[in-house]
Length: 447
Image (tube, rainbow, N blue to C red; front, side, top):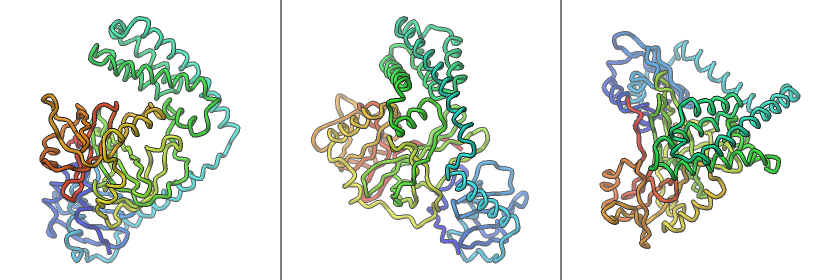
């Protein structure tokens, strides 16, 4: 029988609206033929029509016959909440045929994925030819990009900001044609910074520097080891690979789950902590808002996650993918002792550690840090974060949960998990307040 808890069920809601609607229909009279076992939950929702709602607890995964594309829908949320609150309502002993067929297909797909992950190459010679052709294409694109960057610096940022869209679009298209999509995206980002004028001069120069570093690294790629070359290719535009063996750590602590909406795309960045080795990692998910796709749920901050991570890069192990696991394992609250061991006791040491990471990998968007004994303070009329030794840093302009942080922290010191984009400002993402872990990350995907 399923041991799904209400907290677990609610953690899979794709947004607050779906969760609210699911709560409203989580009543025995709203469903029929409710059943559950160790693998699945099923039932038929009674509304304007009858909708078969299915939950595969291995994952978990969701399926409903209603027309809503975003999953889990309100019918599935209501069913999970109902069974979590009262398992005795699951009286149907026989799985419906659509459920059996769906589970069989999912098991087959999982086996096929394992087979592909073995890394067997059917035609090594053809693969080598394709790789050589792509490297030649990238060579040409990188050379054109270097000339483009030289022109920007020669003309100056102000004049470059006046260039027509065609100039920038042509450079971006040439990089796309050269199969260097990562560089194309960075050029698009640079265009946005340059067009903002003097207020983004520093950021624009950083982006130009990083682009130049990538070009130079590609030119000297023969001197890089396998891990460094793999990471460089990812930055340039190769598809991400997770060929490294799964990490041995099985218990990861979920520190924050930051959800954002931008340009029709919902994204989710989940920061994790390996308590045994005091290291961080993150998962990054995307879902098209227009297509109704859902971000994966079950990553409730403040709980432990059981499973292996497979990192994108052994050279810069931060971004990873979660190896197939069951997210419905019994959650364990974060221990304060674990946080104390993983946190720095002052900002200076934490930032020095971050700067070492930045020197090794200047291409990351943000770097994580955890510091104990943090307080909110006022400096020259502005709120800052200060440690117990008098060091202080400004809050990141993107931080929107100031009032929540003030309410949770009050005058007492706390342990904060944060990230920094520039080593000068801090973006709080979670914290330990009064023996409870609270998320401070943004969640603006909407309903």
